Length: 470
Image 1 (cartoon, rainbow, N blue to C red):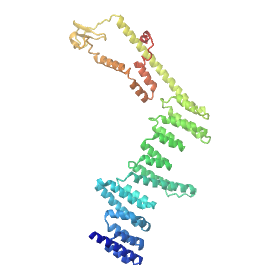
Image 2 (cartoon, rainbow, N blue to C red; image 1 turned 45 degrees about the vertical axis):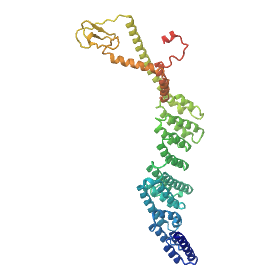
Image 3 (cartoon, rainbow, N blue to C red; image 1 turned 60 degrees about the vertical axis):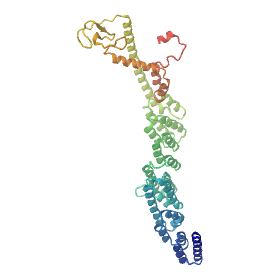
Image 4 (tube, one colour; image 1 turned 30 degrees about the vertical axis):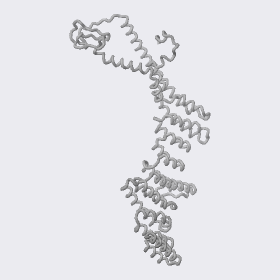
């Protein structure tokens, strides 16, 4: 009965208020709304009828709970912004500060508070400057704001930069220039770059990279690609924009670890020779690239020649110096390798002769003192083929039947272990392919495993006597 009476009373009050409004008695309508505690009617009368925006804003800010503030700001905020932009914005900003404080105190309701922040941002949907200002406020004041806030603010900065650049292109000589000599577009660009670098860990880098590419902000693209280590994407972007110096700088910076960048750059420059307007500049770039390639021996000169041969416009003089230096370097390397091979062959011949002597000639031992204790030798004594002689009691007993020289034992064990490892690696094809993929000098890996005997049994038809001779 009580609820029914209250509903009847509310209907009667609403009817009375509407009658007063129709009769242009707004003071009576407002008084009735206040007595009935109908905040919604009060605000409607103040904003829609009396145009008393300051009092309406004061009621929202001072006479309501926090939740109701957000509700009524969402409802009447857009209209208040049009009439009292600065006062309304500051009121919304104060609500935002309170929202940040409440969220920091109540970690369990983060989702709810984020939703409320998004609803406050919607108030400025028709006001670009205040929207940008509120996003900037949230970025600076809220350490836990969502990534979308940064995305929105960055996009506003991009639009400002794009518009300033467009105006300057239209005005050309009449473009606005600041006292420090920089144009408005340059100032907007600096603000954008500062924002990207300052908050680099608080936004989605891939999303921002897409925006920067869309607005063609090359410096921003470079920064994001470096953050994401997207070297090839950065190379592609420079190529599309014909930024020759940046292409070479990128190769210089990352070419040591990413040598394919040099090949990619050279291929691009050779292909650009067909453009007569760019021909001289491109040939200079090719010379620079070749000068750096001289210090990268792992890139074959044959590959460089193959790339260069794809353009008939490339002059021989451009690659002549590079090829001459590489041929000289290869000749020097061949000479050193021949000396090394000759020395190794001599060492092998000496070892073979020593082995033959040990097998066919009696060994004479003439030592008069023990190698271990340095005392005069007395029978029984032990002579080893390495040339050492010991008293029988100076050589510790061995687990095997054959006793070993104490002086050469460690070296002998190391040699045997290494031999065992090499024999085990003969069948380890996976390790061979793994090292082959990683190594820059792939032929060295093949030669190394060839020496270990990895390929010894590849041809089953080779006669045994030939295998033994090998």
